[in-house]
Image (cartoon, rainbow, N blue to C red; front, side, top):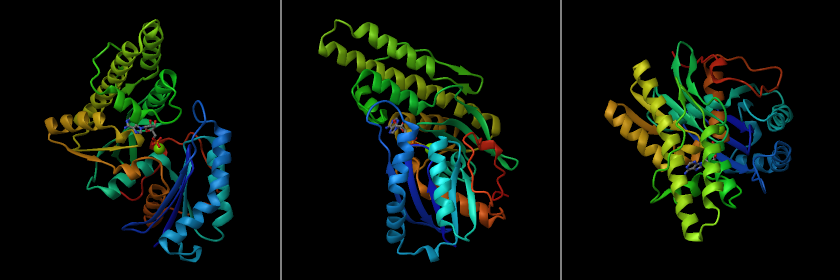
Length: 333
Ligand code: AMP
Ligand code: MG
C-alpha cells in the first residue's frame, strides 16, 4: 500500500511517499525568514508557492502517478494555523476520493525514528524549533513525561544566535561551531519536576552578552561568545539529559530515541549516549535526513494508522494545539 504524506506545520513544506517497508520519495522546501523568526503569513505564502511543484517532483522521484497512491496523509497539528491551513486545503484539492488520514506531527517524529532504526519501545526525546518533549508509550498513548514550560530548545538556540550574531536562520550548527574550546559561564539551570524552561536561560545569556561585550576588543568578544555558546549547550543539554534519564528510570524502558532538528547536535547526542551507557540502555538517533520536519514521517505514520483500523476522516481540518497524548495509538499492541 502506498501512502503520500504532507508536512506543513511550520517552516517546512514537505511531501513524502512511502510503503510499509521504505521511503519511495522525499522532497521538501524550507521557508527561511530574511530576518527574525518565522513569520506565519510569509511561511504560508511560501508553502502555497512551492506545493504543486513539490508534489510533481515527489511523484516523479518515486516513478508513480497520483493513481498509484492509495492514501493521503497530512500533518493536522500542532503548528502554525496559516501553515496548517495550506496543508489541509491542498489535501482537499488532491485527495479526490482517496482515504485521508490526519497525522499528529510529534507522533510522526516518533514513528519515523522507529521506522528507520531498531528502536521498539523507546523514551523519545523530541527536540526541535517548535517542540521539546520527553515522550514514552503507555496504555494506547504516547505519554508526555516532560516538556518545556515556555519556548522550545531550538527556538531558544535560534533566538540567541540571532541576538548575538548576524546569522538569520537556524542557529544550532553555528552555536555548535562557536562552542568549541569554550569555557563554562554560569547560566540558570531550570528543571521543574519533569518539565523544563529555556526562556530564563535565553534572557540571561543575552544579558551577559549585552553587558560584557561592551567596550571589548574583537578577540575578547569572540572568547565571550564562545563561552556563552558552550555554556548554553552544556546547560540546556544537561537539563534534557536529566529528564530523559528520569523518564527511563520511572518507566523501566531500555531504549532512548533522539529526534527533531536538534538531534543534529553532537554534544546532546554525546551526553545522551553516556547516560544510556551508564544505565545500560540502547541509544538511537533518527538519521539526520529525517530528524527535521519531512513528509515521509507523515506518510509512514498515516499508513500505520490506516492499516490498524483508523477510519479515514471526512472533515479535512487541523488543530493547531493537538497534543501528542491526545492521539489514540491503534498500531501498537
Ligand atoms: P526542526 O524544527 O525539527 O525542523 O529543527 C530545526 C531546529 O534544529 C532549529 O532550531 C535548528 O537550530 C536546530 N538545529 C539544527 N542543527 C542543530 C545542531 N547541530 N545543534 C543544535 N540545534 C540544531
Ligand atoms: Mg518537528
